Length: 338
Image (tube, rainbow, N blue to C red; front, side, top):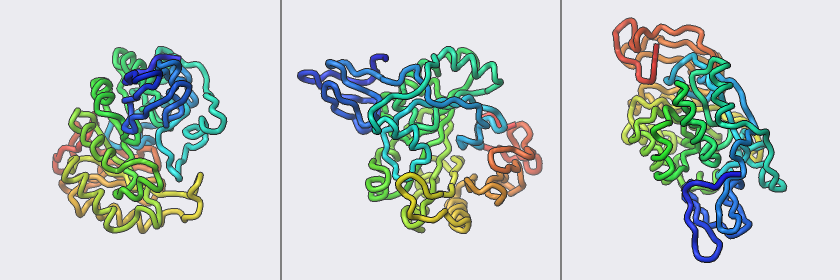
């Protein structure tokens, strides 16, 4: 239990949370939309501080981050809870579990213990992932500060719904983020995600403005966000508003949670999305969840030479030398590209 950051007291015992872009007004004894921030007598508290529900050592490529310390390992943690209600959530067992009786599950794991385990396991970074890191902000913030002192990097894998104020506070300790850009219509975000597209777009731009390395992921769902118009809209937004050097991961959907009436995304759809991204001028577009199909490889934006060959989350060959293509010396965008 820890008093939350970014809230203000209102008349009576209500509080106004300013952590995520839902900006919940929470009555005494109630929780915000995330399910893990509760008003107790006019004091907003985090119910998940120091209480992890998952911890793993992952390849950084699993986040997915292909241009941030490629080939390194990242110590990954999560708590229960999420501020989104995605019908297709792949981690619904921990992200949505707080609404099945309100129980906060997990095990005690302090920020110092996380950092110690990350160092002992040879990780280069700590990733706040699996569920939405914004909702366990205080836990992530304290861990990130200690991680930076220990020489570790910090990574958010996020839905991009953090407020500007909260992002600015943790920004100096964040090195990279993979942000889900789940679709490109307000209708899709309203019906499938229960959020607003415009808020996510603003957040992405703010991450970029703060100098945090970002990569974007779109899970392509047949008959929901796979139209030519939406995919072209995403590609143009990235190219024009974020930067053509920003990697875009177009990823295969598989039926899960409350969206089991749609088929897996055809590989042909991923190929089409990738080509749309390249036609828009993006330098790096990747196909996800289809290992072995070739869409996971990194190619030189200058001469199209194969630079990094991948299979799933594993690097099989890395030909980049000092951050450059060995054939034409074009710089490969990213952080510590060897």
